[in-house]
Image (cartoon, rainbow, N blue to C red; front, side, top):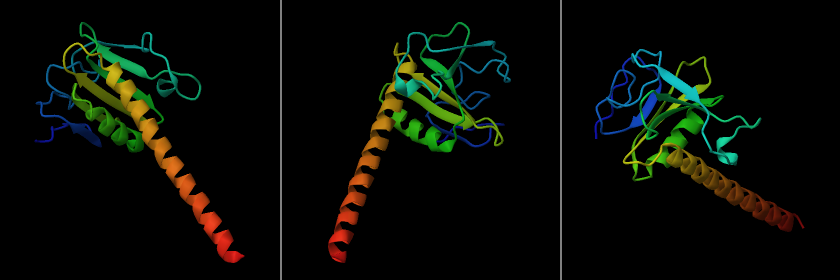
Length: 165
């Protein structure tokens, strides 16, 4: 599978077999209004979406950017104060979903800690569903890694104490 070309965007990562438009996202998909797409976009919070995985420390919900006249299956989520650590991990988890046609992210500028995270789904599945599932799955993986590490540290400390006696 060929990797898409990203034009003027730097530090982008994506997984798709689709041809790309001017922003590096699939041709015909919703662009980010005011960023060279010629489309006016609107920003809004997730309607009716709640849960710990979608809310930040202060309870803030990430922005959702969607071009006017498009349905909810092609959306860009703007994640503030994040970098490649979350972006690439989340992209991997979201792409495991067979209903996801395209998933990619880009860091808008190296001096900004903001990610534009794009999801395009097949059919009528809203893009917020694989986004939520990806976040929850990623939290589960991180919790498993943490539990395994803590258990190993506990066993190591117990072994060292036993050797010292």
